[in-house]
Image (cartoon, rainbow, N blue to C red; front, side, top):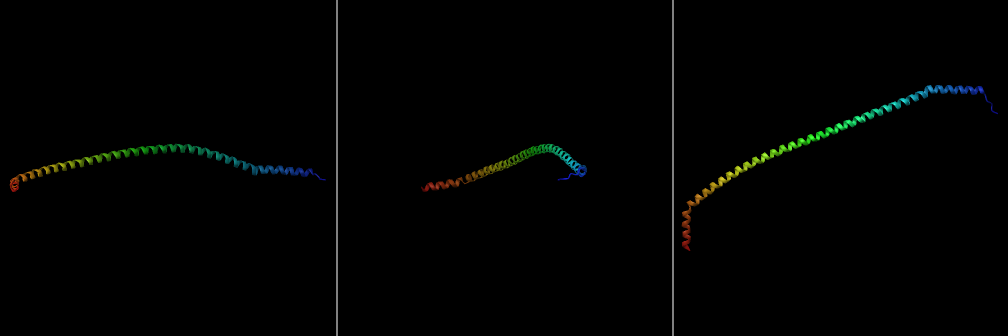
Amino acid sequence: MLDIHFSLMLFVLVLFLILLVVLNRMLFQPLLKFMDDRDRSIAKDLEAAKGLSGNSDELKAKAEENISRAKSEAAAIRQRVVEEEKALAASRVETKQRELEQAYAEFIENLASEKEALKNELLSQMPLFKENLKAKFSKL
């Protein structure tokens, strides 16, 4: 049969307990400490990320506010430029109208003087026309 040696069993038991104590100090405690440190680091990084996301929301709101302000300023500048260009175009149209009215008045004066000159010329040639008409009627 089997022969059981209590001294050998006791030696193995003591050796097993010593091995557990050594492994606990050299392997398990450093491993547990590393895992706890890692968990704390992850929790700290999550908190920092939450703080940054809150900060990014604030920055995003500021950026949107700046963009909307810039858009309104651009619209105001565009409106002002359009109004200035309309005023400039209106003054150009007014100037051109005055020039055309002046040219038209000169044309009317010229036409009136030519009309008067033609009338005087026709009146000066009236006796000649009368003689030609008398000659034509006499032939009939």
